[in-house]
Image (cartoon, rainbow, N blue to C red):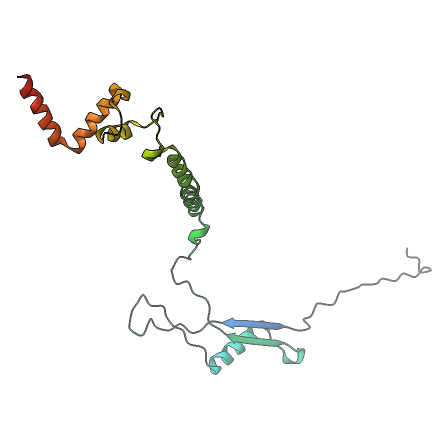
Length: 207
């Protein structure tokens, strides 16, 4: 049993299918690969040639057909010809400059340190050592004969005493055994022939 006193309304909604408003496409095409180098070297890289206008137009037509090109819709297709980067088979140069290498920096520090030490020795230590050696070198004092009194005592080194005794300027009474020994050594070094003659005379007189 149906009751027609109450109306009933049925509504069916269907979504409209989507549509493309506009298509824009850009295509980049490599050069046409050519033969190896002109000299016939197989290792030489091949040189490509750019595409002609007819070849570009043919590729553009192919792209339009592939994407469903519609000029009334405002579609745009661009075909550009440019050479691609190719792998030459050579490994990239990843080496760093030698001055940035850790070992180069270490060697540089060692070299500069050695130079600094050398400069220190030449400019400071060497002059100081010369001054010390110069201060330790005894200097002989020459006293004129007129200023030397009879009771004056003059302190001379052993070589100076030897030269003075040899010249007759030093009294024999003031000479010690070491002074006489130094005089003998000086005589042997300065006039060995005379010393040898004196020794022969002494041996002859004793015999």
